Length: 452
Image (cartoon, rainbow, N blue to C red; front, top):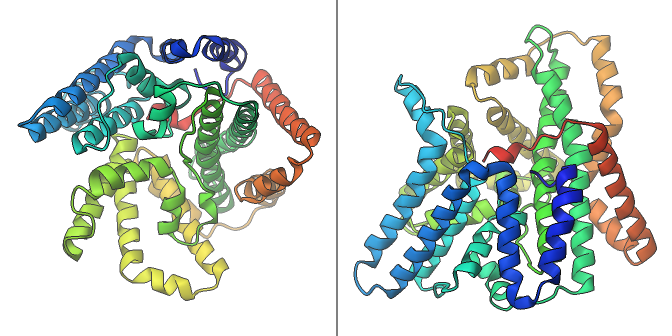
């Protein structure tokens, strides 16, 4: 069950919010835990015991690590290995068997496993570091990991981000609830009205045979995919952050208008911020960061980007995608960034968008051969057909709206209008109504990060 579904909006969410906001404060965490388990069970009932087992394991191991006076590193290593091996088994083991020419086990990927394992693992590591005491109340810890707004697609929330709200539950203010509703509706509109439309166009173009796909169509298709993956994931993050506000939590931001970047380094400061922060804090810095010389820094970056790619999936294109960014970011780190700073802003922006979109082409195709065939079409010298002009004109209004929505301007305009509460409310109601009309009238509602 995804947020952008009629079942969630009109069945699960009203009931869940009623109980979590109306129960006595001492029972709020228990209500959140129950709602989160029901939410996960809608789409992952078979894998629910796995998720609860992982959480139970990390709950007890954090306490054990905190109490241990010796062998704390051994205990931490065992906890990390157990979590990573669990992730490896369900996400990558079938791919390894196929690579070795053996029969697959046919394992289904548990929903959200990459997110909840990373979240629980960060907690165990923070306890080992002494950054926080272990949580003794199992209901509080289980509620933290399973918190349904961010359970299956992030943002990746560290325990410190919500520990105060979990330790002393409080009623969210009316302003916080209103702000959360607006944020949720904004994310819903981004997901349903923009991401779904862009995804449908990408599916149509990518399904064409290379002979039927013109250079203009291929380039349009990649633009649609770039818009889809941004509005799909950032829209879901907005909905998660909005729901968090309604429940009384302040989740970290996950996107900061990444397509306005002027370098790939800047892009990764703006894209999937919580994942980048996780790898920096729990892999790059422990490996030594940039403190042990240039060669070691590059090795550490190689590890980070290889694992960033593999985190997204087990197929080879994700590893290539991670290494693609490793090469480009090292180039920026060593010499390219100084050159980019001297260029006009529109040139550096064009450079960033060009390589970002090529990266999405690697990301989109599980089979590199298919991606190469698509890339070949993009840079072929096919003659311009009249049908290409029709496709450009047909999609131009949507593209203009999507490009505008990918900038900070809509947010600035909305905050200006928000001074007039009636107008701001009308805009939110209108966006929600349009999104619901789309959902009711269309059965097409993909969510890319559902598979991670």
